[in-house]
Image (cartoon, rainbow, N blue to C red; front, side):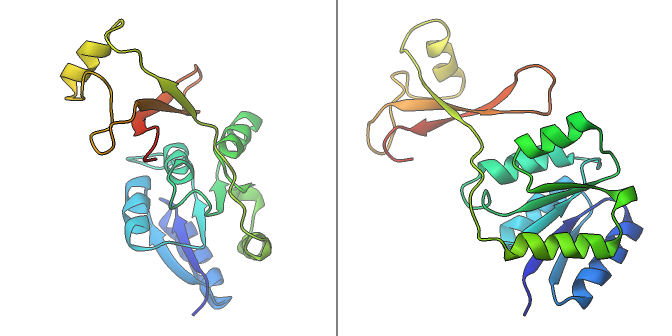
Length: 191
C-alpha cells in the first residue's frame, strides 16, 4: 500500500486528473471537494500529504490550512497548495500558515505535481511551527468575569482537572488583512 494523499479541490476535472496520475504512481488517494469535507476526511484518515486548493466553497483553503497546522495531530503533515491564484501575497500567506509549497494550477501539469509530491515525501518529516501566543488572564479585571459567566468558565480561570491557571492561546489568522487571532483556553500544566 502506497502513501496516503488527501486531494482537496472543488474542480472535479482537475481533481480526477491529478488523482489518476498519483494513483498510477502508487499513492492511495482520498478526495474532498471542499474544506469541510477535508476536515471530515482527516478525522478518519491521517494522510502522509495533503494537496489543497485555496478557493473553494463552504470553507476556503486558508482556513483549512490554519486548522491543519495548529492541531497537534496534523501539524506535521506536509501541505502543497495547488491554486488557480498565485499572487505574491497569496503565496506568502499560505507559506506563513505552514504550507510546504505553493503551485499555480495553470503552470503545473500533473507530472510536475507528482514530482513535487515525491520530493516532499522523500524529505524527513519536520514540524513547521506555527507561532502561537499564550497569555495569562487577570481575574476580575475588565471583562474577565463577564467572559467567564457568558461561557461558563470558572471565574478564577483555573483548570477543572488540575487547578492550575488557564491561559488564553492565540493563533494568528492570516485570512484577514488586519491582525486577527483565533483563541482558546489551555491549561498551563495539562497542555
